Image 1 (cartoon, rainbow, N blue to C red):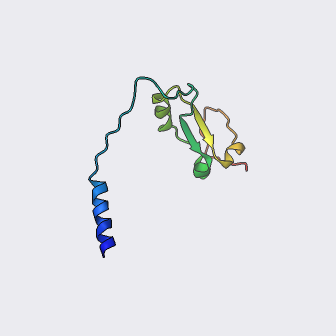
Image 2: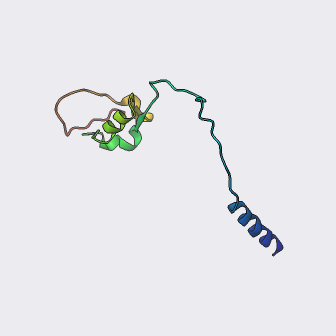
Image 3: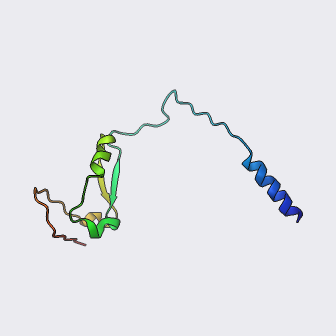
Length: 96
């Protein structure tokens, strides 16, 4: 029982503590290249729904983060084939 009381006391002591954190913002600690990756789509989660992929969400996001790069990642990304065209197709082929 005594251990239980001590644990409760310590728990309340930790919860009541206040901390001040100071961050020196006078100069950057690290910098990244302008080609730093901004948006990634995982092929594993979208493998069955790539037909008619809608970029209405990712395009404004990439523009807001510009310069931005779009990356298709995941194990199946090596098997993707992209073809630019002006028509939408309901056909979907996944090579893998």
